[in-house]
Amino acid sequence: MKGWVGWLLLVLSLLVAIGGYRNQRVELETEELSRTVVCELGEPCTVQAERPGTIRTDVLRRRYEWVTSLGPVTVTCRPRFVFVGHWQCVPVRGPMGD
View: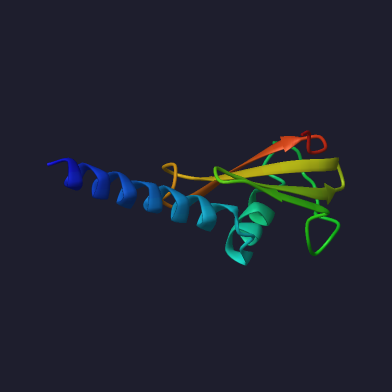
């Protein structure tokens, strides 16, 4: 019985590691998704660059800082569930904080 528990923990650890690795990669899909929501702040704005000025990723989210006519806007994208699901992005006015 102890052997199965060890193997189960190993498999779960590998799944979490793979999920975290996939989340922290910079992908064009989420960058484009962030570009589509960057001006959904309630005021009309235009994106002033083709690519975000700053991109930061970690195992739980991807953050993009876009330059707009309203100033810098930070878009945070997360998967619907921790490691799986469609990405959802939320814009916040202001530069990216640490």
